[in-house]
Figure 1: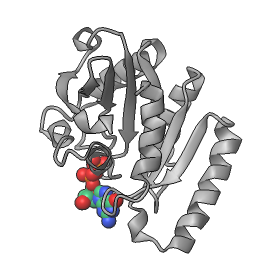
Figure 2: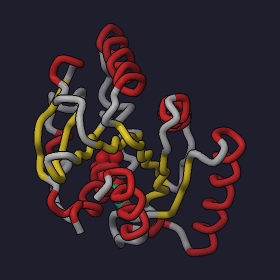
Figure 3: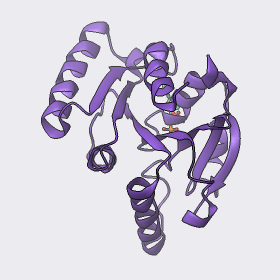
Length: 197
Ligand code: GDP
């Protein structure tokens, strides 16, 4: 499984620091504490890979992990971190916005959501960035281990329906758990497909 080759490449806090816009990359977004780092770790089987993204000072950067020289995973900053000054927030908004609008290498977006609190404002905004660009998105309803199977399926069906009505068929969704590794293979298939692995 090629995702297991992922290793830290670089961090960018503005457009000039982005690596060359070539090859394929998949971006990961999620509200802080949703379980994005744990999901990245489970997908790459690199425990602590995404810890680097949480290093103070890096929480406001795009963190690139290289899978192959032509394939990257990009950890977008978790939303809702320690109060960010207003002007920095504006800088961020602009950076993320232009990244989504102009980045050729970007092939898809993964949005990580706590299965108990899906589709919050930020999640919807990230999904619409992708969909507006014509990019596919995939939602991980993580921490599925916190719910029984019945509740998982119920939430999955509800979220599926909401996504279809808001975004048509460009957004897919699945249950996931960084803890029990439920759904890892399914997510890897989607991401690997986008990266051309
Ligand atoms: P991030 O801020 O989105 O990167 O979230 P983290 O991956 O750091 O996870 C936030 C908290 O949720 C941590 O205490 C994790 O141990 C916990 N967590 C993350 N994923 C799971 C999961 O799949 N199941 C359970 N039970 N807890 C999880």
